[in-house]
Image (cartoon, rainbow, N blue to C red):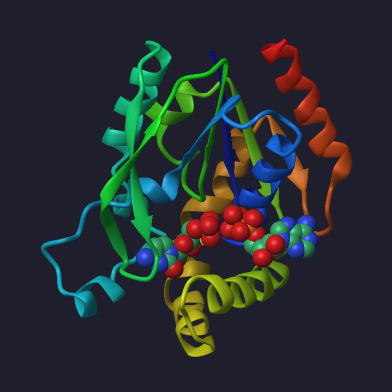
Amino acid sequence: MLIIGIAGGTGCGKTTVVNQIINELPTGKVTIISQDSYYKDTSHLTYEERTLINFDHPQSIDFDLLAEHLAILKKGQKIAQPIYSFVEHNRTSETIDTYPNKVVIVEGILVLTHPKIREMLDIKIYVHADNDERLIRRLKRDISERGRDMKEVLDRYQNTLKPMHQQFIEPTKEFADIIIPNNQYNNVAINIMKTIINERLN
Ligand SMILES: Nc1ncnc2c1ncn2[C@@H]1O[C@H](COP(=O)(O)OP(=O)(O)O)[C@@H](O)[C@H]1O
Ligand SMILES: Nc1ccn([C@@H]2O[C@H](COP(=O)(O)O)[C@@H](O)[C@H]2O)c(=O)n1
């Protein structure tokens, strides 16, 4: 099993890169794990309390469960991947059965911050886009897809996104085997990734 980790700041294009990599493959050929699925269960908090969580700090992620799930997939068994709601700021009560494959991709802002997860990754990728570009993308995406308004995104950017990016995310670039520049769509990098993955699948 080849486990590829894809990190990078919010809005850099991780999800888009993953979709570009797998879009020509038959469905289910590559296992996709999103770090967002592993936000800690915060059902004991009210909605108001959940809005105050720092979602860009490594402590917001249940890395133990993520590591356990990767280990189970490595053993060839399926996992029940949690499903996260950005609108509720919480895990839903649903999970999705996720099956092992020859290639597994784990993507998320913080996946390279955790030593145990890094150890489990065969290829570590960091997707880079400039801060202003990421903020513009995040604003547009969170308003259209995640039920946010401009004030929410900008307040969160100033209070947590920017400082957490500088403290925890950007420094993980040094752990990356490959850095993908993604201010523009980077078809060359996508094709290189596709070649690596196809070699494993064939
Ligand atoms: N290279 C790119 N150029 C322009 N827009 C992009 C690019 N990559 C992604 N986007 C857009 O930016 C937004 C955030 O991308 P996404 O893949 O969700 O980022 P991430 O998963 O890193 O937070 C999406 O609306 C996506 O369509
Ligand atoms: N309830 C939540 C949980 C997380 N976020 C933000 O999501 C970002 C990570 O996801 P990307 O797809 O952008 O990589 C992270 O920056 C969190 O601030 C949120 O807004 N609400």
